[in-house]
Length: 105
Image (tube, rainbow, N blue to C red):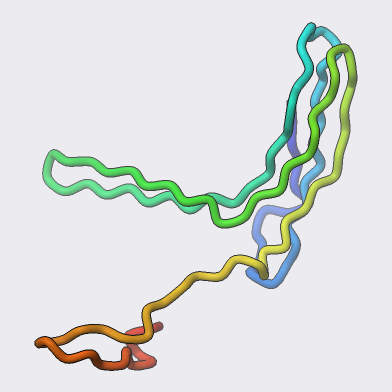
């Protein structure tokens, strides 16, 4: 299996395009699906404690090749569809206040 992107860096408004090639000619089992996704990974290390968090932001999938089949497919993700939710209010000293524009940034 191989994948090649048309470029290395994308802006949030672009479509990420990839060419996927799966050589399933010598396999005796079907490949059920091929996925292309954007994943956010966060690693925290505090003292001797480690945390790893992963969150899939956007995903597309295609049915994979059958056994003995050579498979090529162009796949793309619209990066403009990635949205993050922000809290617009916060509780401070028992009172609910709106979050300022500076804090949202």
